[in-house]
Length: 99
Image 1 (cartoon, rainbow, N blue to C red):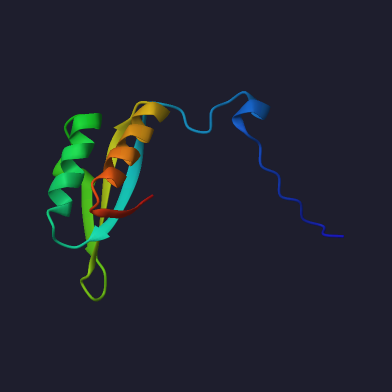
Image 2: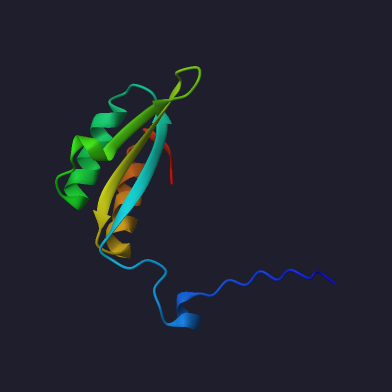
């Protein structure tokens, strides 16, 4: 028998939300470098989360330069907002993954 037990409690079990909104929320987007990826990602974020300061945006290229990772910290207002952002990012065809 394992002496370590891992339990996860859901919002329904505790009555407390996993995230409390509004909150600072980082969204990482990975896509093929180029193709105006950065511009499109920021347009979608601003359309759904308001103005975003450049200090809230960071980028990193893959070692071979084929992919670009863009992390944007937004003020998340709720799950519907996050769901919309994720859906719009994926719908661009430029984005490979959203975390």
